[in-house]
Amino acid sequence: MTILANAFDRQWEDCRAASLAAAERVGASGWYILGREVAAFEANLARHCGRAHAIGCANGLDAIEIALRVCGLDPGDRVLTTPLSAFATALAVLRAGGEPVFCDVDEDGLIAPSEIEKALAADPAIRFILPVHLYGRMADMRAIRRLAERTGAIIIEDAAQAIGAARDGLKVGDAGRFACLSFYPTKNLGALGDGGALLTDDGDLAEMAKSLRNYGQTEKYVHAHQGLNSRLDELQAAIMNDAHLPRLEAWTARRRAIAERYLDGVDSAHVRVAAGAALQASVWHLFPVFVDRARRDAFITHLKAAGVQAGIHYPSLMSDQAALLERGAPIIAAGGVARASRIAAEEVSLPIHPYLSDAEADAVIGAVNAWAG
Ligand SMILES: *Cc1c(COP(=O)(O)O)cnc(C)c1O
Image (cartoon, rainbow, N blue to C red; front, side, top):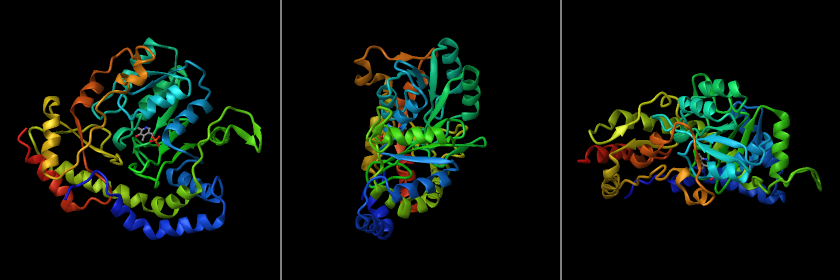
């Protein structure tokens, strides 16, 4: 039996009764788009995240595009971000009409304040900073906020992997004008399909985001903006509100317990576990380890033979993807992206999810420690 990266069968078993009741309620209501379920979920999500407003939308990609547009991104505006993320991060910048500028990361895989500082000094035209809270770890938002204040750059947080994360007294969304969430099923708070949300404390920005997600409508049949069709379904909102959001705290606690077990148990000359500043407050969306780049495939094959499904996040930098290269050479910030390239070549993600048992975690540790390198 393989130890999978996710166990949706177990999640469904646990959430089945509440999810079916939610589906029954929505079906019987006869109201399927932007009704009381989305409103109730948004209110609970905002409360859970400690923000004044949550705005549901169709996915995390759209959440980032909408956030950039609400904050006044003009065509060609430069958006400083990390090259080490799901491609949606860069794609959202392009979709909004912006120009991504890629900046190196720290040992945790997070956009590095020292690199942001260099990038801003070299290019005063950078108008936005889009940090990604990768692997469930929060970027150093205290430092990033200080740097942004110097130049007036606007911060949007890509928190798709980091709902509930905090660091140095700041939580997700404290430093950004918006924090963007994804409810893709593998995320810490997933839907039974696609979904996303924006978090903000600003009522005017929230209203504009609500308009953009719904054709740019300001009232029925009045279109003030060129918006998207990016609505969160009533069905997904109801299921998340009744079955998933109430479990999120326990799910996160379980991820942290497994991470502790891995941190205690993994002991190998050939496998490095990052131990940077952001680990303690991580919500452990993923558990990355690092191996020699020339031996990574062999390590993954070894794990597979031991019944462990490993992943890679991410095998290529966004700045190396054809979709970007076809537009011409992507803009790399002044400090280069050497550390991000190294992580892309060396990273392996071990299974971590709320339904992983202690015995399975121990089996993963055993398989890792048994690797001869
Ligand atoms: C998943 C993810 C996204 C995109 O979310 P979708 O809901 O799949 O569009 C964006 N950024 C990061 C860091 C992600 O992990």
